Image (cartoon, rainbow, N blue to C red):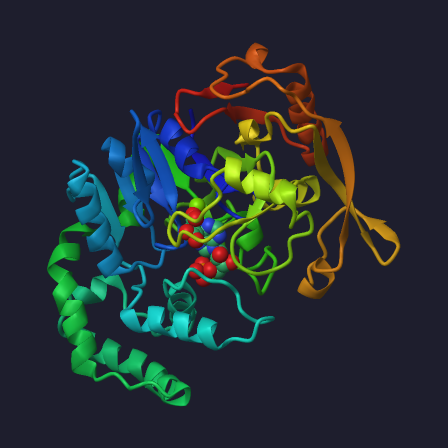
Length: 425
Ligand code: 2SA
Ligand code: MG
């Protein structure tokens, strides 16, 4: 296997954790390249479930794991996650985990600002963020005032950096009617975590370059989904990072030629957590059944996910913007036993048929899905390990998805257990 980028092809929660775990067995290095502890990846290994949000999934299997510069890094969340894993018997040392020296930090003021804005937003402008400070931390990064991991190691420059970040945030806080922050308070916050982070900080681009030259296999682990991409997603109802496959290079410090294969993780229906347009949403019994059978609750926040039919228009668009080579289709079993299943093949907008999602949120909220319906299947697909174990109708559904999205199904996942995976190509 060559170097693979795993991305979500919908709005996240497609089941990336399991697939990354399956692939990490065959990789030498696992890299996170965007997002932060807003991600929620669940791995089930020998019946034990591990919930990761900031750490690359490879850590559970002792693979070299890398937090790239494209991530926003919350030191306190990091320490808490290390503790949780330790309690589960997984110990993580600096020789298997590297944090990019140039990764921007999420400070407590970022989380506070994120939550305040959400609380005070009107219904139509609320994003439904995870409240983890992701957006404000990325704002500071592009605003050129982030405190970066390497600054923790340099007590001479830290006071200047703190001053710079507070020069932006204190006026903002004043405007919001919350107390300003004293430089010393922020310095203390950082001093408290530095000893725990320092041993992991490294020149990640160089570590990865070395690994690549040595022919080691690198797995890039995306978080969220393509429709949450800050450029290509359902803006402004998106996360604040680029989540598409191209970001794997920029967010880790490797060139695009380091990427050999893009695997799009795709759920057999659609879910979304948070606000924003969702053309195939089923606010009815169908949506409820999908949610219950698919256990559709946020890993990080426990929020209930909105559910709907498979939207081939959206996934076809994801295939294009990510350069998806093949997909891993997940949670097909959730559809077991349904009498009828629908796939959205196009939209109607102002009486016209279109085959893409318009870029404006205003139009996105007005498109009406055009459905193709399928007879369901009554047999269970849970735990199928061969193509031949699947009911004929299920195969028909999968084949139609391939046709509509313009990409082959490379893997089919039939339960959360990693061995219940059918390798198709
Ligand atoms: P943020 O916090 O600024 O990134 O939120 C902006 C939007 O991005 C969505 N978002 C997500 N959607 C699905 N899954 C995510 N990760 C967790 C999970 C979420 C959870 O895997 O379950 O536990 O709730 C994730 N992270 C961000 C978010 O809902 C906003 O729409
Ligand atoms: Mg998730």
